Image 1 (cartoon, rainbow, N blue to C red):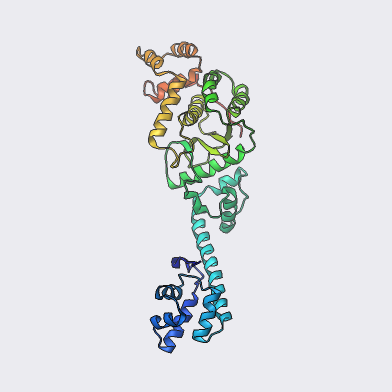
Image 2: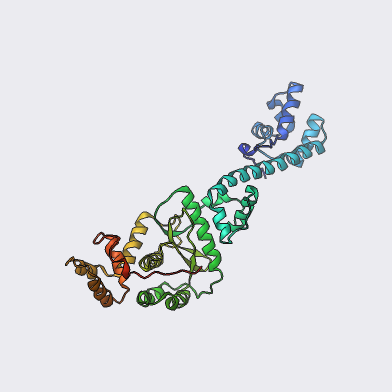
Length: 358
């Protein structure tokens, strides 16, 4: 079997891996022998000899013996050169990987992650790289670019490179916490059936609905976890497959009840609408569809349209409409604010505020 090397990986910041072919080339030059003649004497193709000299193929023990016959240099010498070359290649690649990972580590909110106990505290960059590799369960941080590893459906308010990395850090902690949650097999039909019951929980206190909500979702194969907000992630929530369960993570960012429920139903929408586990994550259309499903499940579009047609949004009218809908009045206020019917400073006294314990 011919083993080839990527020659663009034969050097790093402090290491240069020189292939045995460089020594072969010197020997040929000293003897005034062309590669064509050398190939004939070695009983090998000119193409293979060219690759051998350029370090693009492995110098095997068999080739080492042929070199001893043709050039008079012991096979052991060539085998040692090849072993040294291979070792330096590995070290050069490793050093290059560390250098690349150090740049990624600088963009991750490491200190904040350490504050929450997600990674060990350290100021040494190389230690951060090692800790982050273990945290993300990858041999190199650059692998986080692989969509097979990071297929996440999420609701974010903005996207930057740093925010994407913060999202991945947050989602990994959600994945880790979700492993502690026992769930039944995934049951999407069962989830659809309990949506009305979850909607009714909007009028309950957090300490009452939280354990019930987690239990009901677990019965459908969904692990619900709450995590603190990471600065710069602009994250509200995320959902993704992990093994045989679906993970739904919600952030403590924006503790107004209407934001909490909209974010939860947004993530449940991704599950119900089949967005989880897609090859390229969620598209812009998926996010719009999840937004529509969330708001219209909380307040049906027809009912909302009938309510706003009179343009009368007093606290008492909101209370009456919310009671008729069987939801918290703060959810109605949030919908009115987000759709521009009232200012964001109006009727906030009708909103509940949750303290999410993480």
